[in-house]
Length: 399
Image (cartoon, rainbow, N blue to C red):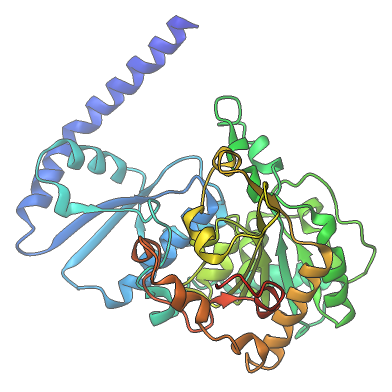
């Protein structure tokens, strides 16, 4: 095994050396061309679909205001999280595998910072509202559109009928991550997980209103316990594909999610969002047409619910930090989820002119007073907010 490892390492070093023969001169030429044209080199974080999608979406929007004297070259890290999205990225950006060698030597040779096109993965938040400003998305090819519609029709869907994508995070996807699960413990953010059974009443209500509900997910723990004909457990469908994963999120009428990555597809395509059981609330999708309902945070010693300022102070990204602060995390009940879904769907039917707008941006306006607010939030979408039902049921929340 040691010999094989060393043999592979030697082959990699030899390959990098061979590529350096052409890559180093190319990098130097790129530097010399800078007074005439700026060539930048970068990549997308393609290993996680949420980062991959919003990163490409923001950079695509930024290109609409692009200086014609700038050329951006990209490569994709393997393996990619979704082959269809990778295909669409390659159709719209100058993306080639050999660019990785330019990127490597641009980093190694001093003076390359101006030629580096950074990924947004460190943030993956549209703080400047660039996607809302330009609202331009990657187009699907006609045959891709046909495949998406055909699959829906095979489920019984008729042209023009609304459909909702439902994404409820559990631990199955990360537990089955063969690349990292053996060496990386994802349990630290299991506070983000939810039970699909608590969503049944809500999605059956949608189905009773004539709305198709597609339960999404690459790999999920358990199936939906509902026999309603308009509820499709796509996560367990043998015919699911990377194309359908992207197409359905991009074309749905509403995305209901717990905030777990693929919902960024709907966000990039500017679809309305309902984010349920969401933590930490400090990270709300403030740049989007997104309504949020958080999990309950309760002081273990007193049983008192945390206020919004306390949610902000204790906006942790790790289970152990909640435990250390003696905070209990309580999921939303089936009724709370149902009430939130009813409110959100009604707002779409009435184009937002209902109770969901009553509170306006009181919650976000109050948030601006907190330290570090600007690091997470810049552009505030006029429809980004907490659900009215949550605020009314928790009158001390904004205290």
